[in-house]
Image (cartoon, rainbow, N blue to C red; front, side, top):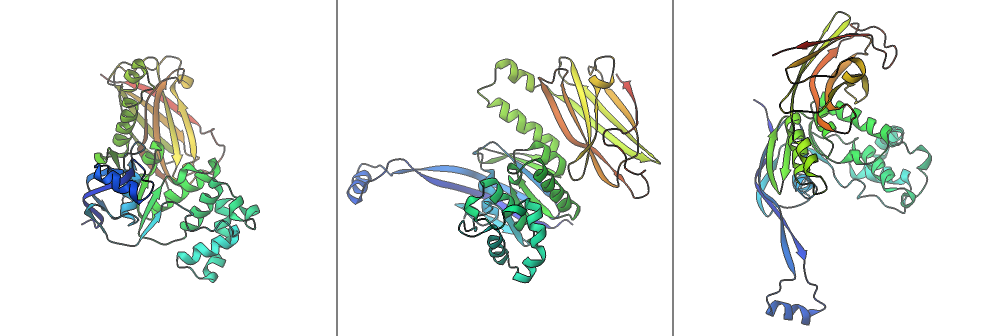
Length: 389
């Protein structure tokens, strides 16, 4: 039986927001006599029930102000709930408000040792991991500068690089991908892949549906302080997009109608000798104008190794009014490891996005199954299109 590591029961949380400022005791007494409280109560979470099993990689998504970050802080015991309970079974490491313990008057080097001590490491242990911390954060040239001279992104990168050295059973991650350039984000992806491979329990709060679909085994949509949906990453990503478009006042009626059109996508893959055989099945459930399908294959660290686009490969436009199967036969020059497949359906001019579906299928290249990795983007391929009813 799967072990429950986090159990949330009937969780409520609210905050007091000031409405009228009292300038001294006299004004405060006068306001009280008039029935003016000086604050209003903002209800953030409204009865959350949630169970997380050991080894799950959970994505929590929602609009700004939906309550997802508050939920994370309640799990980390940073906040106390108004009502309800949070039970945690295991050592929990929160990656929330990274860098809070930093001292701006100390150098980057000094802050590494100070934060290492806060995480329970000795100076000798920090000595051994110091080089890796600095290289991961990509801050080799700045370690003897005071932290107050760092940009906010540099500070969070350093804090994240230190925090991942902590050994925990359960990790809480809040928007760590919001900082850093593409190279740093790839390192974050590689770290996520490592956590997934080690079957760590991870709760990731993010606005990135690509990250949710690539790494998460399950996703949760929080809206207006409640869990609105709990299911597969693909399902929840689609609901998240619908929710954002439904509430986007900047969108025209035509744009809202466009993004509410759906398509059914599925796939399967297998490795036979020196070939990767991939089938992608598509069928529209509402009429789309001039659709094009883009298939991508990703390594487990998030690096894309293959791309196929119907409007670049086919002479005729893609007709998805009937179930359509795109069959790809690829020479296996991929490196060893795990791979996932994503599909995006867009209009030919890329102006309209009909749907993006990550991790529709996966496959593994075992050692000695593959040729030596050769040229990126140059995987020899064969393809065909099969029409159904």
